[in-house]
Length: 454
Ligand code: ARG
Image (cartoon, rainbow, N blue to C red; front, side, top):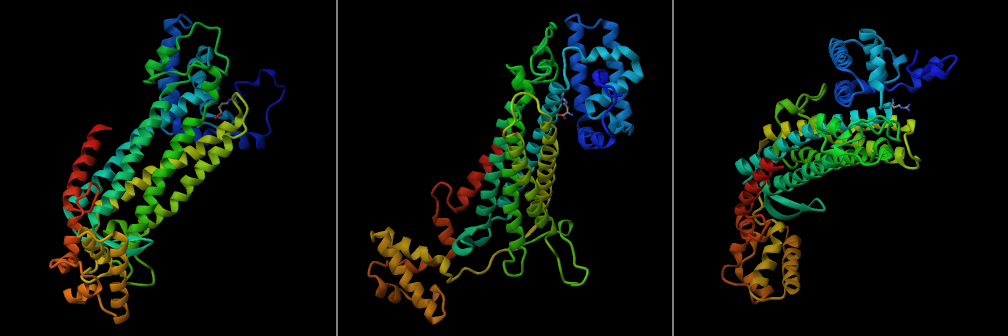
């Protein structure tokens, strides 16, 4: 018999029970449900709504329910959700006094509380795994990022860079993902408990006390908002979706970089798989799965936005559908970030193609002229004409002589050919955020500081 069965003659159809239960999802947050109930019972006693022996019975009973769940007890789906399952089991253990626990509370504020507690803890885990990824990228950039590779735009060779420059570009995205989550965490960490169904309660509860017991930073000011707000769920999923998209971009790099065509890296055996027919294969499945699973996280964000759109105040049963999306987004992002950290930590960095004479150095010729007072637009045109000429001859820029350069423009200086050295090209870019190694080490230090801080 359901805990709300008083005004009913019969009960829901079996199909309705199966359709409407959230227990199978809620079981992932049973610990939060019990933690919330304990705080509520503690507060009820402090304000005189439970006497001490009732409180002690309830707290001990909740511990027994926790033992049951930890030991593998699985409630039947006639319990509908985790809140009813826990309370029902509590009643089996301690009898009618269990019914006092629900004073000044509703499943509406209970579920809101549980989800916030669950999410707060997962945000902390996400932060830790993203920090590990940032550290891995910074470490690899520092230890073997001094490897020349082409930097691409439009996936066409653009300018030479140290591979570390690219690795750190990703590190900064993940550093911002951590900031986004930290910001979201502040809004998650507000207590809805004591909102009851939506209207508050006539009982003399102390919401600040339950908030304090549960480690919330404050109490939500409006009871209707307390039970109906889901923006924190959307926001956390959005932060996950952005992080997952960053992970997917990095995954795509690893897929490309580990090809024979690029060959910048070789993924470790731990994060590769073979083929059942082609014996030579070493496939980047981990990276491909990170790329593929991102779809679920992005989909979860859409599902949540559509779920909440158009819902009137206050609680609507639709809200129950927030958890499959939220849980999927969080679990997938956590797992993908961890897998990606493993790939980065263990990959072998092999180096890029030779860039001597590469057209990726064409900008150097233009910059050389510009440094000698030639307007950059004109310099760009001159360099382009030299590329055109070399391309027609099927040769690289390194075949040009100083006379060839001066025939194209008289302002080329004696040191012009030295500008075509790929390493010199990279090291010349000492502007803040440029490719010079000094800039890479500066960023590594700054990223490591942020790891200690957030
Ligand atoms: N299972 C519900 C959920 O997950 C709990 C709240 C139910 N409240 C209600 N009025 N039916 O959202």
